Structures are given as structure tokens and as C-alpha cells.
Amino acid sequence: MSDLRFKKSERLKSRKSIGALFERGRSFSCFPLLVKYNYVETTAAFRMLQVGFTVPSRVFRHAVDRNRIKRQMREAFRHQKNVFYERGQPVHLHAMFIYTAKKTVDYKVIEQASQELIRRLSNLKDLP
Image: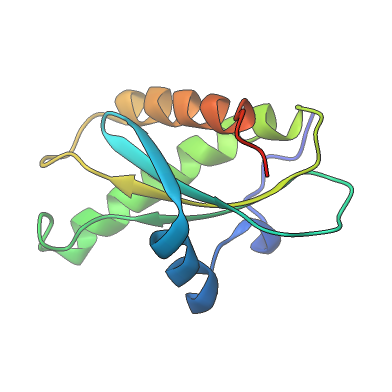
């Protein structure tokens, strides 16, 4: 069985990296999530995906609601991330998963959207 932890090395935390991601990144979506991604120059011989999760505070005013949605998004990612790592070509990606729905949705919907987005990230044709 593969490792299902969400490791520290997989978290996108650098302000500089996040800024570059929103400035130069590409995106696609699957309701209720949108993913922005950016390639990172690296000499590593393995695939690496660093991700962040965000929920707009303008739509969800209460932190408890935002935190619950982010927890669900992280959990869905954690269970689906192996799809990305099973592909062959070594590439380093930064990605931000953004919740776009105006109301909370069921976890199953988030899980299916996450699965589709990770599948699409792993099959990207526009490699650098």
C-alpha cells in the first residue's frame, strides 16, 4: 500500500512560489474546484507536486466554514495523489486548489472533482 500522508514536502508554503503561481500559472476547473498550476525548473529525476488549498473569505465569512472545506479538500487530495505520482515523466509542479462554489457541497462532490483535477494534472501535455 502506498503512502497516504500529506507530507510537509508536498505543501506549498512559500509566498514567492505562491505569488509566481498566481502571476504566471495556468488553470482549469471541475466544479466546485479550480486548480492553478505552474511548472518549476528542477534537476530532480522524480515527479513532485506541491499544493495549497484556499477558500474565499468573501464568500465564506466564518473561519470554521473555510477550515472545514479546506480539510475536506486536503483529505480528497491525500487519497487521490498517487494517480499523479504513478505517471512516468519527472516534473515539478506547484498547484493551488481553489474552492469556487458559493455554498458548501457534499464531500463526495469535492472528492470527485479532486480526482478529475489530479488526473488532468498528471496527463498534462504542455510540459516545459
